[in-house]
Length: 436
Picture 1 (cartoon, one colour):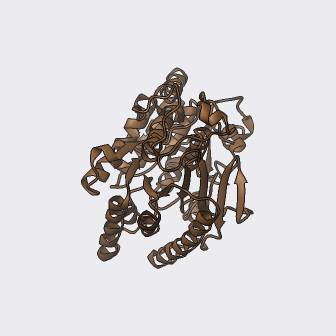
Picture 2: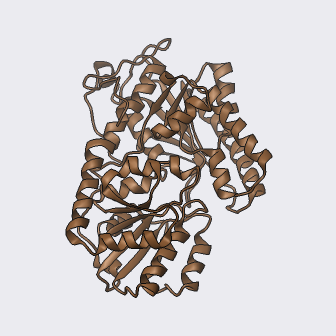
Picture 3: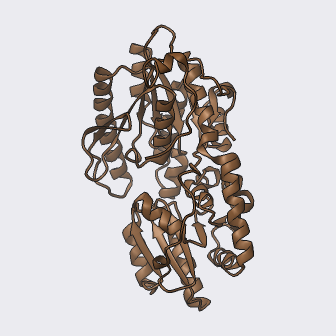
């Protein structure tokens, strides 16, 4: 599945195969970690799966509670990680349906957390958001079993609500701020995906600086790298432009389709094909928009695709699209697709967002926020200059290798757990390193 950089094992680890690192109060036992995630199944959730593999490689016993993916069993072991899965609530839209979905997830997660506890005692519970609803489970374990709580902060839920439901209930918005505050206050340590989120944890959540660690969702460049292109994706045209990621209301995929419409119909470019990879709440509406605009011959939707299909598309693509519009959520969020494009040496075109600039630097061209015509102009600027395009792709790949790769983030992540459990880091790993 996902490769994690190997490291030397200590004598204690070697004696038990995967390791028996020492923990305060529990000599000779491998410390256990339970990770809760609601947004995606594991191992489909790339960040969580990288975390699981990092913990396993360091000698921790790892379990996960998450929703099922299609065809998933209720319980399984994948590469040494114990997975407990529940049937997700049927996908729907609207605020009421989200409340029902989250209640369903909370009850199912609480039940499986107790099951995991009975089967394999854990020392640390890590909850990932969205949503910010699992702190009562963590708090109960903290009070009654002394389990430590780590909050892995993936999204700004109040801003996510504002982005999805513009003009929505102010009372509900205040409620989400309260749930976020409770999550921060309950956590022993917060792991933030970027420095903007770290500031939120300290300013809105009141966490001291030494209780917040930045761990970016860096790709693995050994696994994600450009290979032979597949001309089939070009559909007989010269260039391929691709989108990879979730297709929700806040992701701006409709803007990317309108960009394609402007390029094909307004600018009369018949040498560009578009492939959109992924799914989400807006998938059906996006397909309908494509058809309404007469782009059926130019724009292909694959739905969710295997790693092999994604690799084939990104090894062929000339430009990777990041059409996330500027709003309070996106401006402060790190987009995983940006770094995946870069890992595959694909130049990026994005709207000018604060954290996107931090990730991509000069491996992207930045359009005026939410301006479809300027976005399209930047796409064509990359496509029409071969030398510039290749250089951009090479800069992005090098930035991943030098700064953003998961192997460089993993040390800071494991350092949080070593400090919490009292485990001594292995030789060759600097416990003070917290990632790029």
